[in-house]
Image 1 (tube, helix red, strand yellow):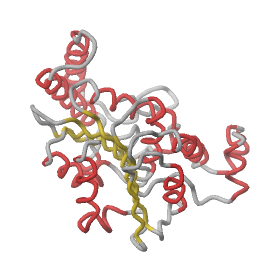
Image 2 (cartoon, one colour; image 1 turned 90 degrees about the vertical axis):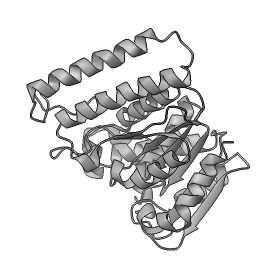
Image 3 (spheres, one colour; image 1 turned 135 degrees about the vertical axis):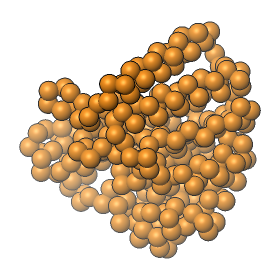
Length: 295
């Protein structure tokens, strides 16, 4: 749950001492629960208790940071869940964009964790302030939290969250990936993509010329290398007129997907906000059905 700091290392948000103490106490409680685990996976009851402790900790932490309610993480938990779903938002969307999908998955019997990426929801911070590696580290932590209990874990990524979901599959083994408006091929020039492929964007003057997105585009480049190695089923959907990520991202996934149960949907219109445009149509139902098949 690390957040951005200013040049002096101080938090960018105003701190409430009482709330800070509450967060510390909840952190100690969550740590103590994790310490008592004997390895392996918890039973359903123990996992539920552990997730509730983390839910309270994250809620307290985000209140202390001054994160607006609509931008906060969300846990939707069941004592006897069939498994878990990790939902990851993107650069231009927050956890709120995944709320309705999360509620539908929860109604279908799953634990749901809609995580907030570091920096999101802070007035003086943008997601570009952090590296794709730091976002991936947070996603891995969220996945491991859910995988500590019974049942499979499915991962849903929206926009850049789809990039992170694919990167996650290199280190972990989710049961499936749902990639919505996947940001795998940026709308950058061939020359810009070549500079990033050669990692020249890490040079200061090249990074300044390319702009803030260069580091995130490097993450997309790495994620494309994971697509052909992902052995789990993939559900991917994108709009042809996506203004942020090239629809060639979906076509790339279609060529690389290895699991025969993978599904792909291309909508002619809807832009990058694919859930707003098509969620209440067939898309929500299609995602829930795909994950419920629990391959």
